[in-house]
View 1 (cartoon, one colour):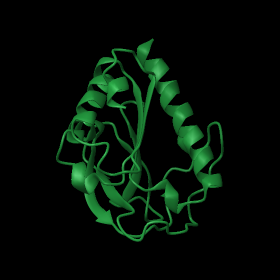
View 2 (cartoon, one colour):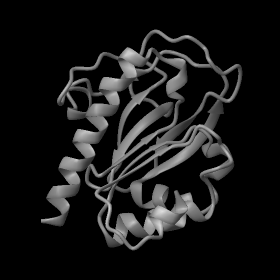
View 3 (cartoon, one colour):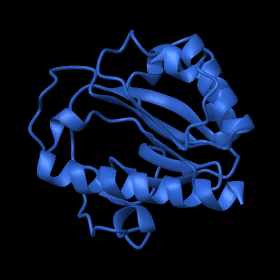
View 4 (tube, helix red, strand yellow):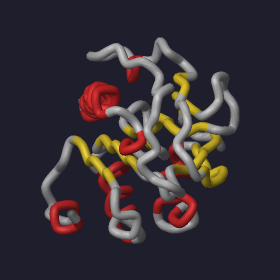
Length: 179
């Protein structure tokens, strides 16, 4: 992954699905930050271990985004959409909140995030109404999606259309940014 990030090629979209928590950390985020700022690349990051990363190089991305690590949560729970009309939940697929789960992980299933400035929009969280228990945010003018829960705890039939929407949304905003 690092070899591709450092290749000098321009990428429209970078997708970080960090299943092995210790594999995508540190200097990876420095290189990804460069791609976000220099190339206006889009980014979708499933990073459910912010508790170990938030003070490292990813903090540059989070700071500009306008989100901050709040706290760890251990077991999967229902995830509610805080703005069900947002394109992330409706284009090209209509995606329902992730109310049903099957706990794949027995601990460290994700992290809560909160707004801290920037242009971040908190899209979903662990409470039915907007609060400081966010788990999904968009920022960088819609080019970035930060997801802080593990996909494994939810039905693949619900996750795949959601990721299709992530891709559609971030790429649409990437192409608007580079025009």
